[in-house]
Image (tube, rainbow over all chains, first blue to last red; front, side, top):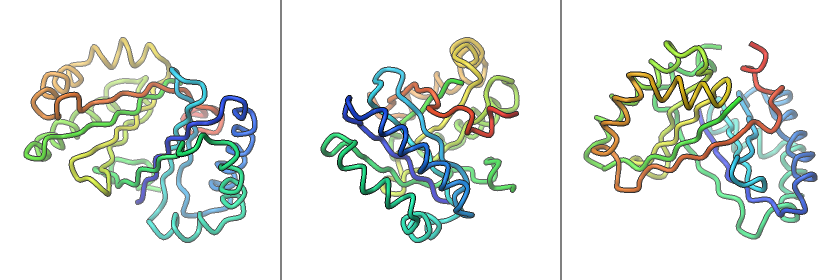
Length: 107
Length: 107
């Protein structure tokens, strides 16, 4: 499995638009990409303009090739420059330490 | 739901011990706490001493009262000072932006 955790600092006047684009991106990723196992969108309780994405993929290829080639990702990527603060996106790439513990490992 | 995302910077010579304590903490949380819906442990691909925990709880009470009162949490808390770099733990508390999208919301 391959994990992507994104910290996204949204411009305060762009939060509604961010939520709209991200709802579509997260739902389409789950619906249309067999290798996208999970795509959770969270809002920071201490900063309403800060969001965290938790994405699980079957493997790196499912992220780097399938996800990044999908039309919903391209729509998000194109919008993100307008929606996020400059330098406001930080991606962390990770691997489950105990992969057998994840429900997705058994499906 | 209530989300806890933890960034943990582990002392390089303590990674094996961290993994042992965290395997027990994450598994006991899921097994023994009805309000702990998910507890995923990830290792940063770019820093083998950096870990990210992704924890989902039914509500804030399940985290603040049940999880923090559990014996496995106390064991982790007591060990963490020895296992982590000084100031090496950062907690982010968050809320699902689209809670109905999460599989846990439907269970």
